[in-house]
Length: 220
Image (cartoon, rainbow, N blue to C red; front, side, top):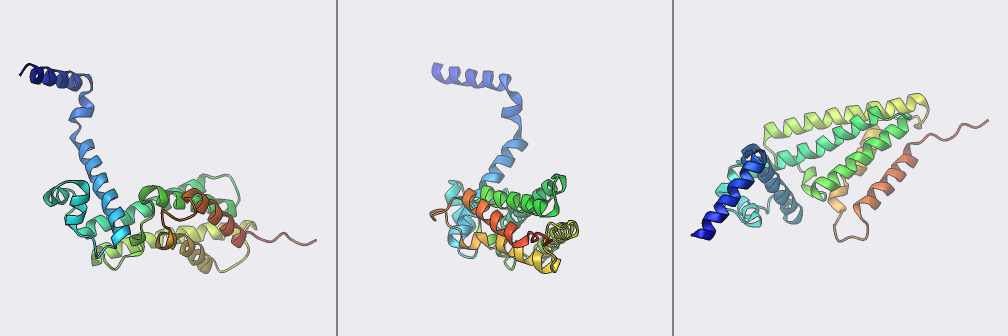
């Protein structure tokens, strides 16, 4: 009993020393929710969305299924969140590009590099990010609408590059489909045990994409 009292006392001291850390239930809930997303994304990547159940997610976390349901009502809700996380990285890249002091082509590469780094960093890539058909109709519409906004912003960046002469004149819509297709396809073929690290892939893709966009020097 003495040891138990001492431990409780020590815990009380910890609470007093850092009450915001101990009693911040919102922060704890966010951390647990993040854990569910991370484990589910990894399971979706390994097994596929259709072959992963909420039981699988709970088992991987070492909790009961009702615990998982405290954070997400359905698998689709987790998938929906994964899509939004990926698009968050796209928008973060666009913001970096807008604030970058360089020509249009450089802005596009800054954007794409950040987008790729974000996808690798968040999920280790997740092939299910290409899956919108498994979402509910409402979720699918929301994802498609947000993707369209990112695509339009990408197209605007390319048109800036064409306008300032740093990007070869081309159909900006097709150029957008080309570069986003290359980036968004990465999760389908990337494997953690493959010969190349995420950093190597990001830099090589950035180099290749830049070469495909950059305008040829004018001839005298």
